[in-house]
Length: 303
Image 1: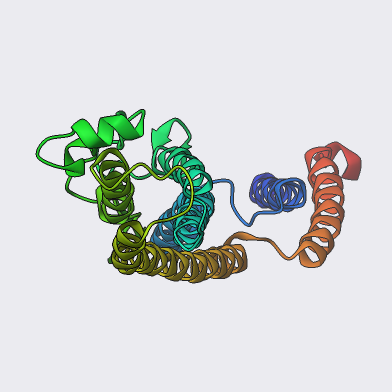
Image 2: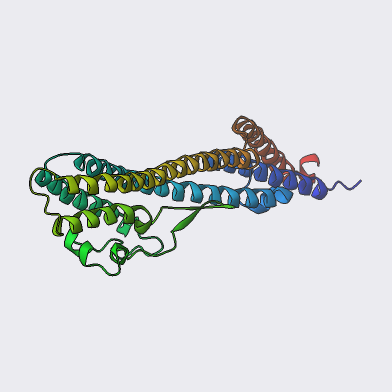
């Protein structure tokens, strides 16, 4: 009877190759922590992984962008505080009986408000609207306000349209009011005081006269209106801060969730991979030994 070992040797070789492949796959999972080296290894779940990664990148991008927006909103809040304080100081100055002190304070208020209206963030003017590369408020002195034609509005060079930004895929907000929106009333009040000071009932250089007092009482109402305009804008800025903060938190949570979801699909069970690797190593040794034994079988051993 003829004895053939070819089929047995072939089967042993196939077992050895399969065991080596399983050992390689298990070792690769242990090294990378992933179930497969590329998306092809995830079959029908690859599309889910691609979609989840894209959504995660969008959320991370929004979170990063919103972080920069929050920094700008904080700078704007400082500017609004400066403007609000300037309006408060001007209102207080108009209640004094010392005209010289009052005019010194008017100059201080002008300087403080001018600096706030021209405040920058990362090189851009925050009150410039969509035009961020030019001074929103161009008057250098109170005299510039008085010479402006037809009125102080000529000293505001900001864009008419506010700058906007997207904080969610479906939510776009105004970044800030413009310099003319928040500063015109205050600067107009300063200009009227300066004009009165230069007029027939001026100057304010000592005890306040009755005519001067009557004017100042009227102007106080205008300053209060300017103060209210600034504070409304400051409150809107605070509301934007809260809105952006909530949006950022949402993006961060969404990114974290997607990270966990993708990891649940991609990440290998390390304990299971280690067990399979050990089993595969054992299988390789046994298969190799079997193949080696079958390869050495000869009829001469039985003759």
